[in-house]
Length: 592
Ligand code: PEP
Ligand code: MG
Image (tube, rainbow, N blue to C red; front, side, top):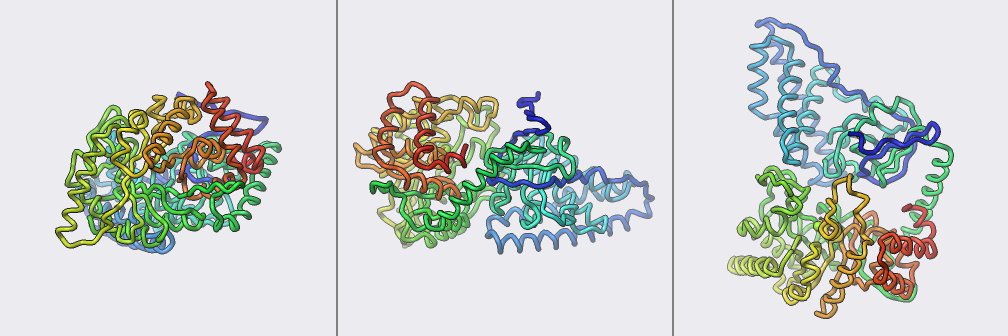
């Protein structure tokens, strides 16, 4: 089914995918041909088998070395966690089952090693791809990545066609493997767009870390674009324009000018507080996924970390208590005296972690996720709680529980936290005895019973991504209903306001850490509703700060009051747009 037919404007073709790494770039297309087509079949004799096997062994050695080199380079430029994926690749190279199958098939089928390798790894990758588990299914990409590298080495080529790129271009490919992405030369690769891919894939994570604008999940872009076609990529909105029309180029040129004007201000903004023109100050923190991201948060002038999504530490394996402690300490030390809110793992939903043996669920977002998963496995959960506590000696760590739907879960989590504290005290380990504990308010039942939850916590942080999903019954990752995903829906405005009011009644500060906090158009609305703290994606911090510093508190209050009275999401959004257009027109230009 062609869900979103491409739209055209003259000769221009507009293609939509999922923006996974922001930025606007234009340049000629470099279309990467799929390498699998190049695999040829040759008959061999039984006497040739040892020679073929020897070629395979040599390719294994060369591949191993290349991956180690890549791992080393990535560790230096992006930190240990980003390079961890290569550990998984190295393990795959050692996989006995694959090796044995290759040896067996060489002997029985009597075909050249390239063909046998392709057959075996293809079967293996297809089996993985067909698994419902998103994490395992993503690993099919890794198997193909390794196989391609081995095939290249068998052919005596150490690098892919990507290495031949000599002038700046935009890569169009059916898929880009994580190692291909990691090896991209930023000076030559302006951006990329692929048929396959998802925002949580390693390829997307690498693109963001490298700062290369990228759009994935474009279905068939590799068939629609020819080498040399002029392209314009909008990595934020997931758009690729093929042969862009003159007015499109002009519009994006304006956006780019607005971007660079703002970027110039960023250097000044970095050290300025997020304060309105009339002196209302609210902390503006950043969301991070891995400890190394704290550098990006600091570089963008964040006041701290408002959400550390610790489940990303569990992406490849289950870290030990010591490893987790080290990860949290890295953030705490780097930020001190600023604070970090460490959210306990939010595993489940769209974040399937295969090696944790999550059962398949029909409705994963409403299933065994986050705090539910943790409370069902107290010993497993306490490992993380102890690690967070051990990292709290600088007294700049707070703990936050995700996906709370009733007060019993908070009481139970706190009981386990007390146990974790006692266990550490018994071991004579130091920690912050008065560590603050808060909850995410991201399920309507939690918002509506905030008064029952409040006595058990020190803060609320509203997770608008899930709050919108659960309140409006709109799957946050289903593009078929994305038009119904409305953060300015009156129900959302009322739930946010209610949570903030209850928080204040109980003397708790209430923040927002969902994407809404990073949307410059909606920030004045949140300020007007009375939020005490915002936390957004790190690159979004300067924009949000810029809006706040262009705003008068009275304007925000007026916007908030009007939103509470309004019965229409469109009207609220139009008011937000009008206000930002008045106080910071270049920001409106940029985000529209
Ligand atoms: C949210 O739901 O708004 C949130 C911040 O958490 P996540 O996006 O990790 O679910
Ligand atoms: Mg959430």
